[in-house]
Image 1 (tube, rainbow, N blue to C red):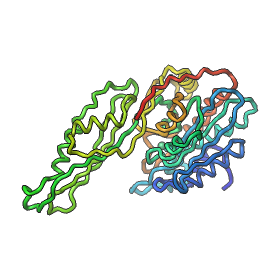
Image 2 (cartoon, protein in one colour):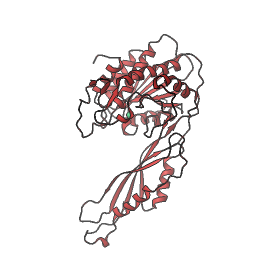
Image 3 (cartoon, rainbow, N blue to C red):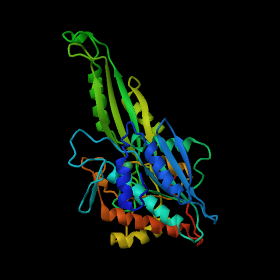
Image 4 (cartoon, rainbow, N blue to C red):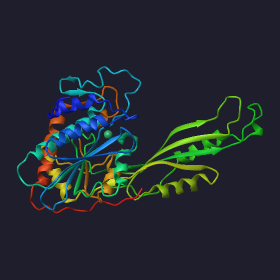
Length: 390
Ligand SMILES: [Zn+2]
C-alpha cells in the first residue's frame, strides 16, 4: 500500500485494515503507521501482549529539557454487530461530509489526525521538545495493550501532557470515569423441580442480591466533573435445565468509578452488603482520570480550541474509560485531555461515520497543540492531576 498522509486518505487506509477486536490482529495496521512515522524521523518500537497484537511507541526527540508531549490512540475496533451495514465497513466510503466505516469515529480518524499532525511537526525546522505517539492494540477489551506497556519497565519514560484521541467531536474533556467489573455467584442445592422444598434455589438468592444491588448507594461525594459512580447489573445466568432446582447463579456487574474510589474498597462494600455466602470475583478494572481544570496547559488548550468550538470550553468528563487509565499513571500523572474528531454518539454503532470537517479540524487542533508544546518557549508544567487508585 502506498503511504498516504492526507487525513482523509489516511483514515480510509486505516479503515481498510480489519482490526476488529476480538481477535484484534493489529500488527499489520501498527506496522503501516510505524513505517509512516519512521519515514519522517520517529524512532519506532513495537510491543506485543500476544501474537499479532502490536502496540507502537513512536518517539521524536526534542532538544530542550521539556518533557515530551504524548498523543495516544487505539487501532483496534469493536465488532460490526448483527445488523447489516448500509456501507462496506472497511471501504471508507464517503458521502457528503461523512466517512463511513468501523472505527471511523472510534477512533481511526483520531489516529489519522494525530499522525498527520505528528508528520507536520517532524518536518518543522525549529528546535522542539519531543513528541511520543502511543498507538495501542486491545483497547476495546479493557486497555490490554496500554496496560501491557505500563507493566514494562522503562518503556514509556515520562510525558509532560497527554492527549487521548477518543471521539469527543473535538471537545476537550479533562477526565473520565474508571470501571470495575465483578462476577457475583450464589450457590444452592439442586433437586427435582417437582419437589422444590428439597433444594435451595440459587436463582432466588440471586434475585435478592440483584434487588440489593439496585438499591445500593456508594456513599461517596460526587466528583465535581464526573458526578456519581454508577452500578449496572449486566448479565445473569442460572440453572441448567427446566426440571431442576438451580444450584448456581452468576451475575455480572459493571461499576463506573470516580476518583477516590478503589476496587478493593468497592469489593468490600459489596461483600458487606451481600453477606459472606455470596462469592464476589474481580474480573477487570480501569482507573478513573481527572485533571484539574485550572492546570495551565489545560487552560492553554481550552483557549486554543475556542475558535473551533466558537465558545470557551467548560470542564467535562466522559462516563467511559480510555487508555489513559493505564498511561496517565504510567507517565507519572501528567495533565491529560480526551480530545478527538470522532462523534461520541457514533461509537460502536452500525453505519459508524466521522465528519470530514471535524477530522480536518482535528488535524489543525493537534498541530496547534503540538507546536505550542514542542516549541522551545519555557513551559511550566503542572502536576496537579488528582491521584487515584483503582
Ligand atoms: Zn475508542
